[in-house]
Length: 433
Image 1 (cartoon, helix red, strand yellow):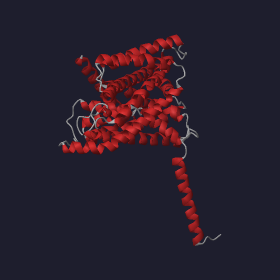
Image 2: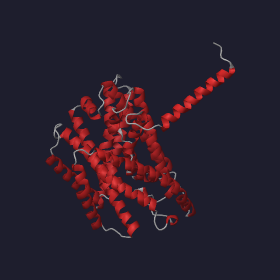
Image 3: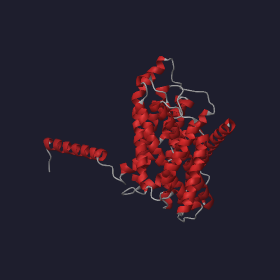
Image 4: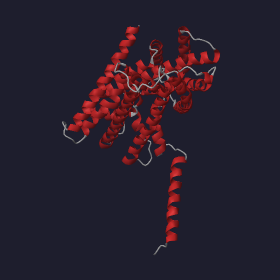
């Protein structure tokens, strides 16, 4: 059948309209659990918490260009090892990270994995406690002009532990607390918007004061802090299969799409936070960016930032309980041999965990030191050592193939830098006391 020019134009226009409808349907239709977009956002949001607000400091410590290069290097390495975990899972038909490590590397490495996982989660709980205690002090000062002493901070930490953390973590079903992570993610996005629009005021003040962006800084131990923070930023490996197992219509192509798109979304937000912070303050960037002093433009106080601190204060309390649930599951696997912990044992573990974490948080007032320690001790294993070893053992290449050797070299370099950052932070805190 012959198609004239008019019919051909109508057909092309119809195809174009349908493509636009499909595009807008994919972008703006409701996000459902197990969908491609839902899984992508779930994977990206694993690392969305207040530690992202330390990324401006990470860039500032090394200088704009070296800090950016460290960020990009670790982002590439993390994305690569996540794909190695996926390939190993598809080859061995094991879609559980812990079981994969146990099956391929043996029982001892499984125990090491569980220990590293516990260190990682306990470290996260400690950083949450430090952050919301710091935010509490700043909220009281900004809203009520009350300065909180160290003794009063200890009382606040004890009350939060007794009234919120222990009761919530003692619950067997804490699924409803997942909404706390949503509140935390919303607060983080809101913080990014506030940082972006306020950046122009802060940048002008910095330029008028004669300050300028430092593109390079001399190499010193602060580079290790930058390294540790960005290792911590790219540590979604534990939750990878939890997200992919919920994906509808699973296939290798859809798995890859979730990993790559989720990673791009995550790093776009991380990069924006880091650069908004650097261009805002230029110098003297605080550990947690929201703790910056308010400008006269927002006199007497920046109430938007204060509202953000209140959101984070309550969401982090619930995040502690969510993270404790992961610790409990690891203890069940490692100590209780997959047997469910009784209520009495669970309560004893809850009290022990929170007393320990609050004591450490009271004396370790710098979250960078805590992140450096847990990044070096645990995340280098979880995100680099285990994925590379599992893949090298299961792939069909000769053991001494150049690609296997190159992966081992990169793994050793990252592990050594992690150990150096751990030693450096531990020494600084011990010598400080």
